[in-house]
Image (cartoon, rainbow, N blue to C red; front, top):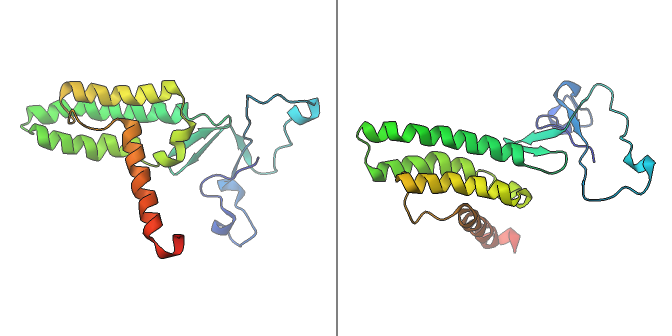
Length: 174
């Protein structure tokens, strides 16, 4: 399946049917679990002229590999979250109380972890989810977030329920 990069929608170019090749990338998504029956089916199609081929597609800050893995995205989330958590003791030593630290944690780390999670959470594997949970568990142990803060999966389920609830209340979605 061929996909265009984030800024390469045909509607974003000079005309409705043209694409800007300098902003376009091609990603061929594969399901590694499926066996290929014919050697011809295994061959990659020829690259499109003027369009770079990539193994990763980044849309709205979410990186998806050509085998539908999001391990790279989770790695970036965990690294950025750890860097933020590293700064929280500095705020505590500067006099920020626990309630304010909890707000900072939710506004930075939790918001980062749950951004667009409805779109990518289904692609996670157990090790990915464990890494995200470990970030939140570490913050609980150090008192940077409330002990009763829901787990990552619970936060995502709550967000999904709110989203679908709002959609159901809209008159044109019934």
